Length: 316
Ligand code: FDA
Image (tube, rainbow, N blue to C red; front, top):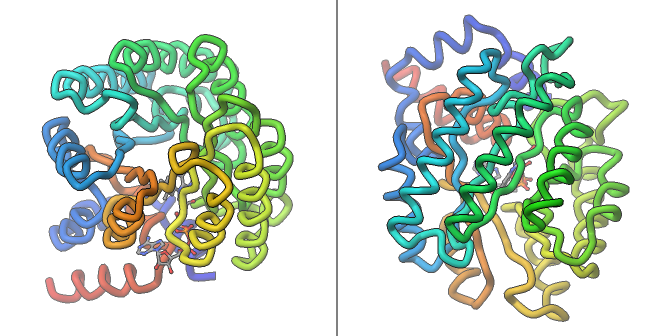
């Protein structure tokens, strides 16, 4: 309930202005976000690599309403990939990038908030193919993040079209969505890279399981399908029970045939412990100045984060 209220309130421009203008927010942002510029992203990626972790970098921003902004985001990704490659960080896909389709234009001219349009899809396809070409040149991969369910079909089409040229292009599937078990079966093919997450968006009950236990059960079902399949599962959760199930299902696979993924700033000790035990672990690291939507989703996931944030505001 708190989670849904928070995610809904986040859409208010007044709340966004208040939160982003409040200096005390910085401490909370710094926990989850690497910094504002490419230099920060590269620095954090380098230090995670030194700790034996793989990385996926996300340039923050979503639902862009200006085509120039979408193009600038794509430019940011190609510049980032160039810098990472120059430092030898992209070798073997050790550091890759995650892209939100609405950050590169999918929501341009969308008829409703959170949605997509045919024109937006064409623009996003062009930018994504430019980013993927640069990733290929740098020896690494791209994963398309999953957003509001209204963009799910378009996002899966964009990923399928990228995979025609770049078979390693990854998709994200959200266990919270009722459709996902079917999508998992369709995508669990040889060569596919699928990241399984619980889902961070406030979705209507017609589309999604809203009870946490139902989401967890859906995650476990999808996890079993992916881990039994011939693709490359990327299991993205901090949930100890789901990590334990992954570990036991992984015993019948080679350790390099799947990976665990977690977010920067969350359960860092667990990330290192899994890697030290021989598992492949990738940390999702966001950077950039447009951190508001990302921060709200992290606060909504955990009441303790919200309490920390409110205490910081009270100390002003
Ligand atoms: P859950 O929320 O049940 O948390 C389990 C435990 O993890 C908690 O008890 C706590 O210990 C810890 N934890 C979780 N969240 C925390 C937080 N914010 N702060 C502190 N501790 C926390 N979603 C999406 O819709 N589209 C996407 O593309 C992605 N991409 C993505 C990539 C990666 C690598 C990860 C790990 C996650 C995503 N997500 C996502 C987010 C995902 O959908 C989900 O909202 C979060 O991972 C939280 O869910 P958990 O599976 O961790 O379980």
